[in-house]
Image 1 (cartoon, rainbow, N blue to C red):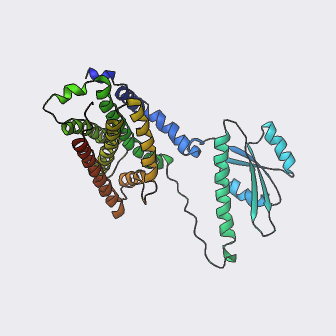
Image 2 (image 1 turned 60 degrees about the horizontal axis):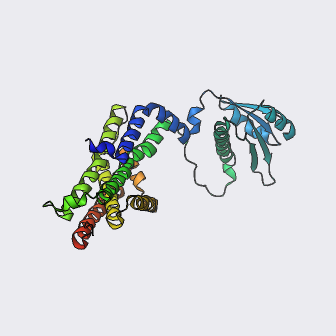
Image 3 (image 1 turned 45 degrees about the vertical axis):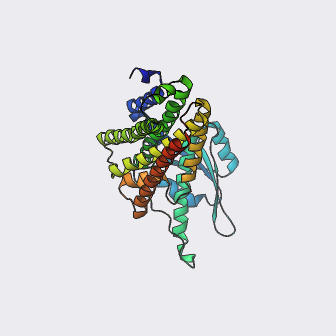
Length: 340
């Protein structure tokens, strides 16, 4: 335990996770506000300056929500004058085109602290206007278009927790484990302690096995701890065993990649740089799959996995075991653990 204090990577990882745990409530509110800015706009009334020959079409939309106020102007110049003076938050110029459709030009403040909230409210206004126009002219269509998604009143915390927070908490320990694995192997060369290990009855495969298993177990243990803490906080996570198995699969695979790089290059800085680049390539490449790992975790956590989701978990487990076997074969066959 005393030697662990000198490991900057481990200490920094622990401090980051303690910070997240200690300020989880504040972070959740702040991150959800970034994820869905409209969730932080309760009580904020946006004043719209409406102008144009089709402004009457927008009036029922603005009147449908108490957080919107409409002030009608005869000309856009008059609306812009009040916009620059701060009397209104945004300008909506609504005009009817020759083909009967509505064209809206929205003007929002630039560089203002309220810009994000105003833009979010403009988007909601335009979404409602689109739905209203669809319903209004549905009888003119020769065939039925694709129906827009139904409006829902679900809390943004639900979507953020299951699609962003839980996948993030599951994969963060995986990156940390891989990085620590690179450090522990590369530092054996830097400090010259590998010779002491080589004179023991342990083989090179035994030494690498110990490091791989220690780091490979670290991530699923942390992931399980996060799931337990989330359950104490009232967030129910379905299929926890399968999620932990998925994290274990990725942990073993990522640790195996880190071990190969550390054994091949032996220099800590070079191995860490190549490991970081490899992680960007690997996790970017997973989004080309029919179901990305983050989506797999979200489906499992929500409790709506498909047979394909279970198949992807099995595929990740198989790939991790193949990667682990490859590392053992390379170490045993090529003697990468020698210092010569």
